[in-house]
Length: 408
Image (tube, rainbow, N blue to C red):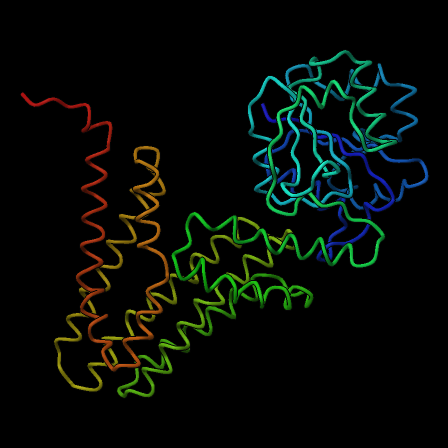
């Protein structure tokens, strides 16, 4: 079962990071990371901090520290479950979802400390107890009291703990100090690439993400919903496809550059969504759909442009073969990679993830510069079928339905 989370909220918990109060951010990240129930303790003088999570955490899961101490036996009996681990965290800590997910899913019979890899002895921490029965109720009360008043842990807990590290620079405590919020935002921005590194192609990882983060840092303050940036990126790609359909070199060059720019800024919507915690299932699928719309438009535009230029009907035949090939490759990737990925070696899948990345936009731009886009057209037509066929060969090679069969 997923661990519960106990948050100790202080006066700094209402400071905003990317427009979201840090306490609310922590609760939302915990929920998105798969945590169990969330509880919150607050100082009586800072009850207003609870208002920012009133729609996320029920009143029965919030109490002042005085209520917690004076009625510990009764409160603990209601809040804490013997079969669940418990994560204790300060309410002003900024953490990314990847790091908190690692802590939530980390299996250990010992306490686990999530620390900043470069924080040294005074590193901010999150503590995960293997279960509330790990210690006596009095011991749990002592841990919470020490953390609440001095931000320290009992020596016996520290000595028994396994230390794991969060993303570089996190967790980070937001305080009233000058530039503390700006520093927290900078550190969160720096972790974005870690969440997509496994599926990004070489150019996306080493070049596109630098451009998208540069733009995201400046656009996140506009307050626009991430989906607007999704539609904006799609519009750039569709304009590029229209230019690619024109029958001359200049239009094709301009179209390829617009398509490349569309790919470069494709990550902006997702990055802003993660920074502002507005990511959703709808936004995820909207991004996938708009990406595929742009790809389809580009693949249709290329043979159409060459047909307009030469009048050769071969390009119209190529158009239909290319459309069928892309559809075949897309179906193969969906069925073999996304639905049945447990049947494959993970490294094999990562190779195909890279091959299916959008790095090909750079090849389109380079070939357009040298007026050789026909090479890409014929290569994509043949390559889409090869890609799909190879995926199915690997599928049948690793499928348990075929792997376990013996010849007779």
